[in-house]
Image 1 (cartoon, rainbow, N blue to C red):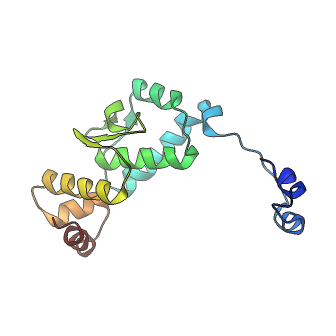
Image 2 (cartoon, rainbow, N blue to C red):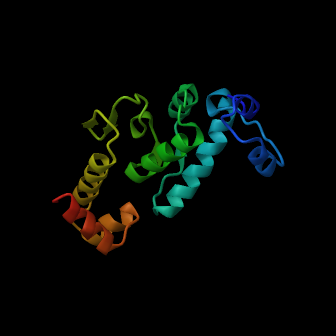
Length: 161
């Protein structure tokens, strides 16, 4: 729905439009700009590999193809979070399809299955995975999760882990 229609239907104030509408940029959704996906993935891949101190260097051609075919209902933010999650969970230099969630009704991470995107559940499982990977070493698990030791302790207590 355009702002002009909202103004015509008295659902948006015209004076407010004049205050915020200095320059209008129409940007199509990501699903209509599939050619932008590789550059966005490269950007987020570098950003999160650096942030989480991961040695993830690239993405397989098969994975890129699948990501370009996906509709991205959450637009760029969904892509950003998908890449971030894949980098966090990655244990190889290249990201593969199994590192991503292509069936958006379920979330799979290393054989674990979620029917919903309940943030509390996902957080608990990711913390468990990090703790298992680092054999209970709080310092290493906290570093991998991008948390301080104190923050990880709070989350462990919160989830009764």
